[in-house]
Image 1 (tube, rainbow, N blue to C red):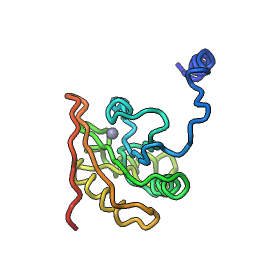
Image 2 (cartoon, rainbow, N blue to C red):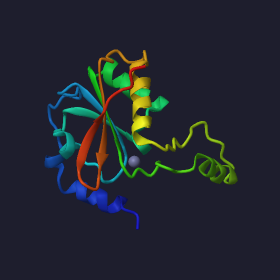
Image 3 (cartoon, rainbow, N blue to C red):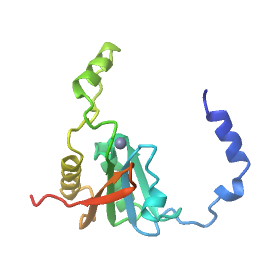
Image 4 (cartoon, rainbow, N blue to C red):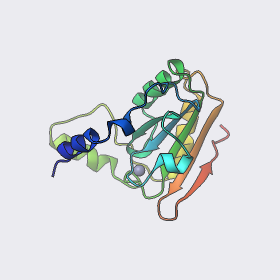
Length: 166
Ligand SMILES: [Zn+2]
């Protein structure tokens, strides 16, 4: 069942809770978080974030795409963030997915997208590549503080993945 009607009704019951009068759009903690869209990841609880603290950018996989670089550029150049945290996780839907099968299914529907699914085999290796791409992206003003974490939704632990030395 579609949820939109119910969601609109719920929002309508709590405008006071939702309003953020006077809260700056500039993230208080000067940080942007890129994460997978996975339903099990509660970034606010995980990272100790409050509304107003951080920019949150989510997509399938938590991958660094051109559009993520667009958002991070805006985050840094327009809204003053200086740090990036990337959160991937164990058990991701893209882990072990077939890039070819996905492309073939799209092609069967007459679609040849300019983007790729971003399927991967090794979450830590993929995260290291993402961190390296961010560090070499001159669209970004601040590249000194870029960290990567992998979340395990089964036991709730978060581990850091260091960037490769390259
Ligand atoms: Zn995922």
